Amino acid sequence: MRRRTEAKRNAILKAAEELFRKKGYQNTSMSEITAKLGGSKATVYGYFKSKKLLFEAVMNGASLEKSDLAAGQQVSGGEKQKQLALDSPVPIVPMENYQEMALILEELLNSKENIKASLYRFSHNFMQTICQPAFLEIYRLAVESSRRTSIGKHFFEKGYAHVVGSIKQFFLARMDKGELCRTDAETVARHFLSLIRGPVFEYHLFGYGIMPKAEIRKRTRQSVDAFLKIYKLEKAV
Image 1: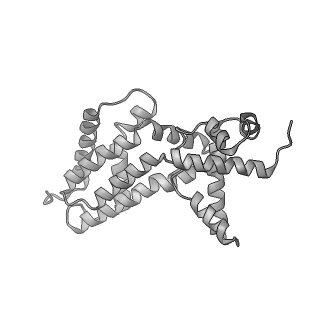
Image 2 (image 1 turned 120 degrees about the vertical axis):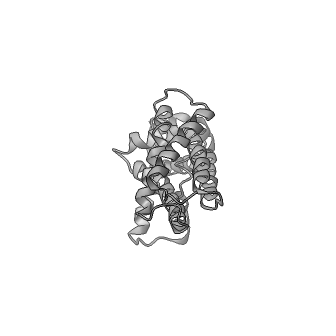
Image 3 (image 1 turned 30 degrees about the horizontal axis):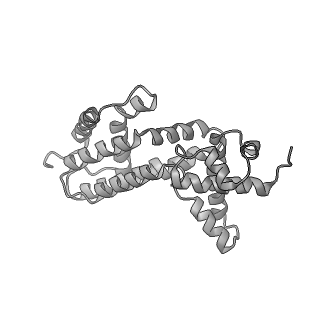
């Protein structure tokens, strides 16, 4: 058996990282990684027994590099550029889902509609996005891997916490307009996300089925209505 080397391992990680970034976890195969790297599948599997373990190594390496930068380690310009690139959220979330989420959040923050209409639209679009199979696969992997790697932490910071921050900004603006009660906006954002996810996300997460769009719309609107009964000012439209 050929001797394993750190250089070969790093080459596999680099090839995998580029494909995960471009195509997402679900749409990348070990055959494609092997083809990009050159050589045989046996070589790749000699270092990583499965695509899941390879993905974990890529993501864990990204998080470690982030920690090194935060600790103030001296690195060259080229190395720093590589580390910052690996720290992007794209390898975690499939590109199409990432782009959709960015647009949905931007639309919410720029919405000129009243708060009920804005939240109706956002809730339906948001749940449609996070219930797509590619996103669910990555979500399950992040949860499963969180006990032994930093993927869960990275996923939380680049996913859930980022969404909460954006919704918080929307609620702060609507509090200023007198549409919501003045209270802690981050807590309000977390309550809101819990309400809209509850009736829809677990249904898909546990593979119970695919909920029709009309049913997702109905359930998210019910959640928005419940949320506004708690936080909306009486005078708000």
